[in-house]
Each structure stands twice: as C-alpha cells, then as structure tokens.
Length: 167
Image 1 (cartoon, rainbow, N blue to C red):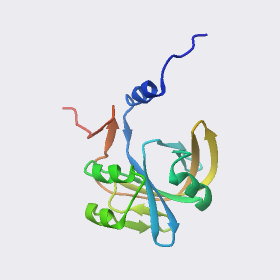
Image 2 (cartoon, rainbow, N blue to C red; image 1 turned 120 degrees about the horizontal axis):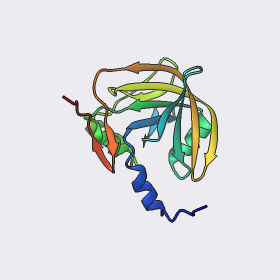
Image 3 (cartoon, one colour; image 1 turned 60 degrees about the vertical axis):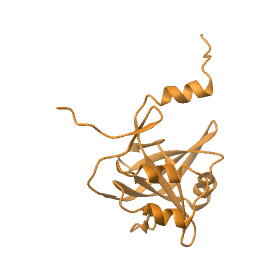
Image 4 (cartoon, rainbow, N blue to C red; image 1 turned 90 degrees about the horizontal axis):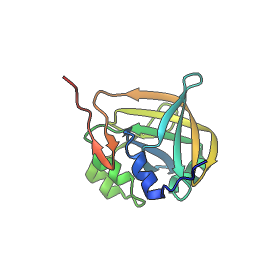
C-alpha cells in the first residue's frame, strides 16, 4: 500500500479545491457576550432528525465553549459579508470593530445567538461530539432556522468568491 508523502500544507492546499460556503458559529460565552468563529467545515448530516455538523480545532476558543454551553448558532454569510468572515477568523474580538463592521447579534426563538442579516441563521443544540485528529466534530440538532434572500459568500483555493450564473 503506498504511503502518502503529502505534507499538511499540501493537504490544506488540496482541500482548497473544494468550494465551501462560509459560516460563523456563535456561542453566548457569558450573558450578553457572544463569541464567534468563522467556519467552512459545516455540513448537513440528517433530515430526520435534523442534524448538522461543525468541526472545531482543539486550540480554538470555540472548542471549550461548545463543550460547556451545548447550544450554538450558525449564520451562513452573504456574498458581501467577507469582512465579517475575516473578523471572526481572528482570535481577538472587540465591540468597536463589531460596531464598525455593522455586526449585530440576535437571539433565536430557541435561545441561541446568531449574526443578524445573514443568508441563513440556525439555532442548534450539541447532541454529541467526536474527536478526529486535532479537531472535534460537533453534531448539532437544529432547533429553528430563518432564511433571507441573497447569494452566499464562497471560499475556493484560499480566496473568497461569488456565485456566477451561467448563461
């Protein structure tokens, strides 16, 4: 059986050939304080029950928050929300930058916090997690979802992209 000589950076580059949408996963870390993390490792798992998954690096602040809080929001970003994605990809967040970028959070009917004005906002509760290498896979049961009009922000080969219609 051949052994892969693929380095981690080459593997990351290879995975960039798969186009993904861009989401922000959010958790209320303490009353009124929301922590967000940009994630493109998000997918649907099941229709019955309604399940999704997100993968979180063990070094990320989000990792311990999801383990502790067991409830999170997922906000799928619109094509013009690249700055929001870049902001939540950083470790440090502050209210001044959120205000400048026009980031507003709202609470869903089931109590999770999401980024307002995004393409899709979902409220989820963690029903299981599974260690997989340097990440954990968090399975979330979707409690509610709200959709808005617009086009998604995409990520391909390390760059943000938009959908183009074929004629």
